[in-house]
Length: 612
Image 1 (cartoon, rainbow, N blue to C red):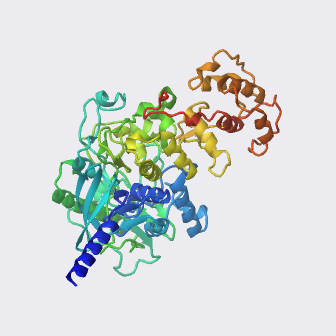
Image 2 (image 1 turned 45 degrees about the vertical axis):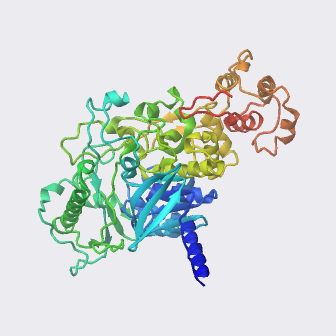
Image 3 (image 1 turned 90 degrees about the vertical axis):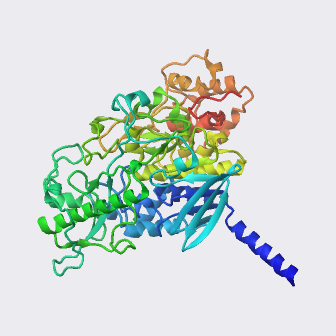
């Protein structure tokens, strides 16, 4: 009997341990962490997400910032899936275009519901209301201890992903990181201040209001907070400065900025609104909590001003969140510690991508401009962020991988970018893409039994393309095009380059799929990969199948060119076969991808070809 009990106890302990043995553990179920978890689990790896709140989505939901900034024409991967589910829920795209700040606005509770449905898949375990207490290296892997409902649990995993809102794990695991504003000397950016500092962007405690259509009773009215000063909010209804906010001249227009479906309003208004500066990097945990309490009071003061000074008593605090005070569960942190990665993305890379090769390693895309909030800190150096003109861009894989720490990946606002570039990469669709890339990288590393720093960049990009994610920020192609992945791969090699256009608050890069490709353009694009074609004459005339055959036969003498003609129609060229027909960029992408497959040639983290 004693032997049986001992054996049963051993089996029970072994089973309990196995339940906490996963391939990948993700700390933080925000936009990046949720996306990473979904992608990695879909690829067949076992994943656990440890999240402090009962919701998924972080800034999208738990912080209440439910107005999407950017990527309207690039519904990449999980971001595109999430948006489509929102459209299905509310009844179409127009039903989401309720406020003028965005094309996609939604109730935070609905966003959480959709993300939880998306995350309800095999291989993905989510520990809600869980707080990690310890993170330790364990051989080549990691051991994470967390508390949930008063009980302590341990998870062992090979790969750890930091998806926290402010890069909490970086100092804990010994990863080198940057914090605050970089200097010109640090980044080479002409826009950066002369001297570095630890100043981070203002944060915001959002509050959701709803139009009750009545001004009766006290329910939903806020109390006047301590230290209330109406002067803090006096210019909220009139904004004459700034490209985006110029022309806001009345209070209803200010409120409509973040109008949500079902007559709700997201109060996330800069300058004379509820932005609030907290120097959290230099505060203790208790000091941060106290300052966050003050940030809540500042938002409460803004709502008191709206209800009492402006007279909108029909707008009452909505019961949107599962909290006693109806505030979101977390603040909206715009900035985090930023890991020192395999590569460092700066303004120069974003402004002039083709002057460098980082674009070849892209894994997430964005088109929002560089946007910083520093109005509430008078000590912040003046930087003319609004006039930094960048086209749409992609985020290189090396920004997610620490320079000198293995089996650790970042998946939020903590990627390796400059402080200035963070003003663009911090936005919701980009972070969803960063998370999806982190999940693809981690899953690939597990499946290949490699460390993330050893994984084929092209393999990760192909996994993302298979998931309908963009690796190049081309606005004029859709993921349902049968040639989408081929055109994306052609762009990521640089054989056919896009054209970037800085355009206000929706920057663009165009691929022009139907444009004819000249012989010279194609040859110049191929030369870095195939120098043996140097002596082939290329004119400014349009590229034809006959010219492509010349190139292919020089590179692959044994290639069965006759099969190209035989399969032309099945390859979906959208053009009749004729050896002298001039080919579009879409057709060239299909033909070169099929015959030469240049994407199979590996590149390193900076985008340089790896010699075989």
